[in-house]
Image (cartoon, rainbow, N blue to C red; front, side, top):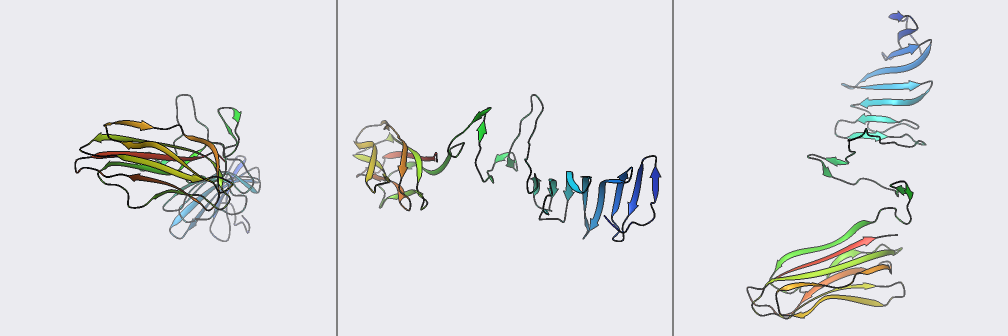
Length: 245
């Protein structure tokens, strides 16, 4: 703050000052520690140490943090927690408490970018925590796929993946059901997982996953259910694609 007007109040080592823009500042022994900014029908509260913001910012109008700004901010639609441009964001909790990233009724969301470099006190590798980027989870199927289903379109750089697949026949009239999952390795060779092959009976069918396989970039990981089924046949198919690196 600058261009201070006469202090409206002094309380021991504390004082209140107003600048030419109408912003109210709280000072301790002449050093700014907090200021209140009314703007556009909203307001912001900054807790400061010297000239660097290091406390809490609650704002209804400031949608974009300034350089070095850290704290908690509400921009009218979102609650934002920021460590500032060169800081570390710590989420701390007391014993018996939890940290939840979510919205509405604690529905988990993941706006996170970057990599978890440690977990449970140990250094991680690769992406830190693997994420599920592809999923084929269909139930009650009574007909074969007309063409392969793209489970995941691999980015141009490729990646290290774990691919798992299984299938269930829950009801059957007549069928010879096959479920396959296909991916392309780094050398351009196509590989196929076959958790269910020409099966004609109710049951659960699975196959060993393709674990820690490097999938070529700009290729698709696909799945497909084939066969001829009776009208009362019901089949569930599942494929998950987890990226490790």
